[in-house]
Length: 92
Image 1 (cartoon, rainbow, N blue to C red):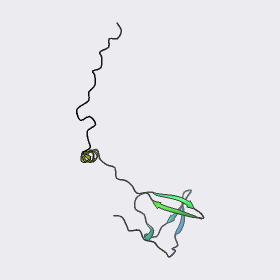
Image 2: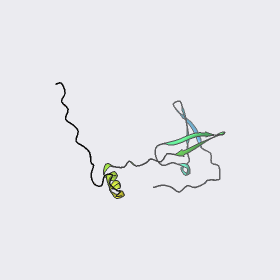
Image 3: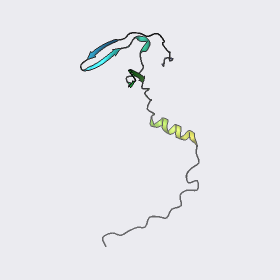
Image 4: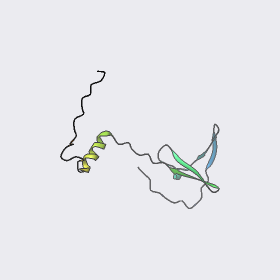
């Protein structure tokens, strides 16, 4: 279930703490992200944190159903006209 994006105009304090040698931020509930990872980058004097939306992997059955639904023209509608490969005799 995806939450609707809401712009929070009022600044909220968040707690900084350390986990080993990494600094972390404890986000208030209104700022939580779905998923397990976020993308982070510097923006001027601040930091921008954005969610990384995980794409669901398509099963092979779903791929074939999607391909069948395209119903495209076959590549060779009359069949492929190709000469047989000649038989070669090696080590005569």
